[in-house]
Structure formats: structure tokens, C-alpha cells
Image (cartoon, rainbow, N blue to C red; front, side, top):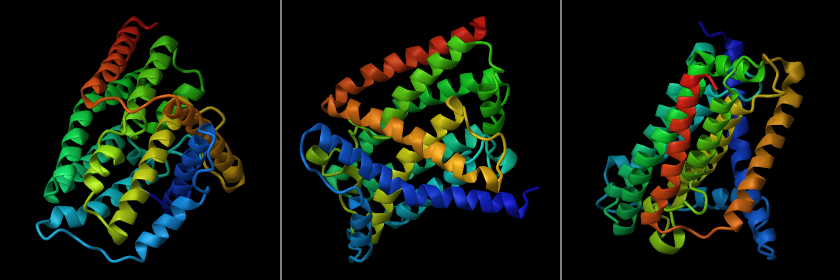
Length: 312
């Protein structure tokens, strides 16, 4: 039975993700610009873009149906639910037993499903092609991510995020090779899932005019861009909760909140900086070449499962 304190912690986590997501997305843009030796946008440019879009008129295609209209709300709803489920301020999820790995994975899948359907529903050729790419990547990358997370769940003996975090942080996992090989496979899958270069294929601005986003405008576009930034930060948060829970408090308390928040920001900052370096050194891959790296990641995830069976 959930109590009011757990509910408040979940809301606080969601608020932190909502507020920090545009900042980290802007930070990635600034880092890429610096690596290119150019000035680039300001750190707060994403906030300005969101505010500007919220003030503009919402123009929709005449042929668009209810899926096109509902997708921004469904997307934001899924991201907010994930933000409530993932442990951020401690190793325990705010909502107790509801903080399950399977629920988080399926919420990501639900958001992606509606996002692709909206592209088709808009009757725009660029959006339809982007939706096609979105679902093709989903078929490839989701098994990799699920297998990598499944191996960690098997090692911890539970799909509960709190149990997994305690097992990893407390040294309760003996098959370290299986754990870290699964973590490496998760990193590759997360890079594709987050739409980072060289795998930003579904929303490729230079090719598909942002794909499924092509027909969105005004507040709807603001919600989707905000939600995409939240998705990237939530994927980072999931990776930290499962594979790098070290240093996080075992349980939430007001006294540990500043330290836990600072630790989360520092870890996320390190991962975003590393991602910016990788993005800067690579060009967008051709769509038909994208499965190559994903198959390598799947091989690593499968080998991680073999190591689990061998307890290596």
C-alpha cells in the first residue's frame, strides 16, 4: 500500500526530470558546438524554444485523426510515469513494488508505438518514412535492451529495480563478467534508443524533416520535443539505477536528498559529455547499415546471458 510520502517522492522525481531534461539536452548541443570550434546555441536555448512553441498556434493536418492529436499527451504521460517509477534519489523506487523493470520497458515501447502511429496518421510522406524507421529500429534494439536488462534481473533474482540496485551496489552479484558485458550491450542499445548520432535515423532533420514530428507545431511540438529530451535523460537514469547505483543512498530521506540529486546530476553529466564526444566523431550512418552495430550489441547481450548460465 502506497503512502503519501512515497507519492510525493515520485512527484518530486518527475519534477526534477521535467525541469532538467531540456538543460541536459541543451548541454549536449553546447558540448558538440565547442568540439566543432563554433559558438553554438546557449545552454538555456531549449527552454526558450519550448516557451516559444507553447505560445504559437497549433496547426494540424486536415487528414490527421485522434492518434495524431493524442500522441503528445500519451508521450508525456509515459515519460512522467517512467520518471515516477525509476529510482533517482535512492536505490529504492518511490512507488515500492510498482517500480518494476518490465513496466518501465513497456512504457518506453508504448510511447514509441504511439509516436510511430502519429507519423503514419499525419498522412505526411516524410513522417510516414520516419515512422517506418522508428519501428524498424524498435524491432532491432528493443530485444537487445530487454536481454541486457533481463540478465541483470536474473543475476539479482528479481525484476524490481530496488532489488537490482541493492544487488549491484552491495556486491551481491558474483558473475561480474555477465553484468558488465550486459552493461556494454545496454549502452549501445540506449544510444540507438535515445536517437543519438549516428543513429538519429527516424528524426533525421537533413533527410526527413524530423520524421514523425514533421506535421506538428505549436504546443504539441513543444510537448514532443520536451518529451524526447525527457526520454534521453530517463534512459540515462535507468542505466544509472541498474548498472551504476554506487554512491546512491539505500533509502530516501530529506537529509540525503541534496547529495543524491548532486550525484545523479554528476553521473548524468559525465554520460552526456561522453555521448557528445562520440556524436562529434561520427556521421549519421545509412539506414541499411544501422543493424550492423545493433547485431554486435545483441551478440554481447547474448554472450552476457551465456556468462550468466556459466556464472562467470
